[in-house]
Amino acid sequence: MKKFNLSIVHIIDLRILLMLLGLLCILKGHSQITTPNALNIGDRLPNDLTEKKFEVISHTGKDYIKLDEYKDKLLIIDFWATWCSTCLATFPKLDSIQLKYGENVAILLATQENSLTASPVIQRHDWRLTSIVNGELLNKYFPHRFIPHCIWIKDGKIQAITSSAEVTEENILRTINHSSEIMKEKKDLPRDPFQPINRYATNQGAAIYFRSTLTGYIEGTGGSGYRTREDGSVYYQFNRPIIDLYKTALKISSSQLLVEMDDAYFAVASNYDPKNLYCYQLFLPPMVDEKKIQAIIVDDFNKQFDLHGRWEKREIPCLVITKQKKVSSRSDSADGISMESFVKKLNYANDITDSVIPFIDESGYSGRIMSSISISVLRKDRCKLEEVLESYGLSLVEAVRRIDFFVLSQI
Image 1 (cartoon, rainbow, N blue to C red):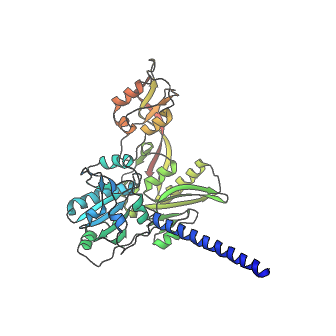
Image 2: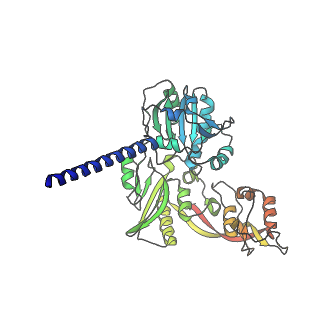
Image 3: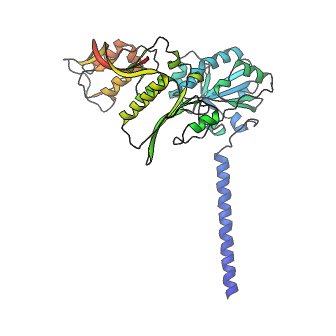
């Protein structure tokens, strides 16, 4: 009787084991089908990547391309996004290279964003660059944390993985001519925002200037944010010019900033030259008041950069939105945006060189504003803006007002 019971147990155990092994095989097979292996330098492109039809934005009129179309050229895939100012700053250089070496080189942009988002940015400039959109498959084969991220492909094989800084005429000619010189490989760093950036700076050879902490350019990282948890909070910005450090900390656009310097190049650094970029990190007790955080950060920046940044009231010409006696032709609607958001968008300026006359709301209008014309157009076309406002019983008048500006000057 005991032997019979033991055999039943063994049979049941064996069946369970076989079922588990079968399930494991299914899961493993599914994983291999849905998740392609990341490609590295020296790997050949698989057929499912070269034969895949990718949706593109192109000045040539093409809607789709295959990577196989570029098999006889040096192909450089440059990952980008519309919000990445560093990416956009490199496009004129890439466009010039494409125009000069087009017979032997193809520069192909790639973004995960869709054509509705990416197309206006590409078409705003006279670039002859083609961009893949909805490029999730490329991201799976070439995973990365930060952009720009460039993949060099020649003869169906990955030759290099670099930052956009390595995309130069010299490196392109070396690659075309099969030079053995190795380019600097881009390796993105895994980053914990609660770890001191001193560690990353030391690993990347960046100078440390100040500990809140302030450092020089750190290759392989980027972004900004504020995080909080039980034991404290951390505020950080990575690889930004001085002007952007102040703007991001204060949550203001360039239209609220006055730069009063004889030579502001080192502070603006719109070309994103690494020697003019800085990283900053500040540890704080949890849930510190936002105004207090901003005051600490501005004080840090002022001390370290020998600048005098402060809020001041200035009397300047403004465009003031007021209420007309005339009744609005629009009925109340839940669509559109609030007047506060509308004015904030009108006042937005990304570049310090943009000339924006401040808009002020004195209408007392509490409804919502809706327009088929983009606010970026309304900001520059006063007639169209007045037509939109008039339909809400509002008008636009010129007047001098005393308003707040953040003023940045040298000590």
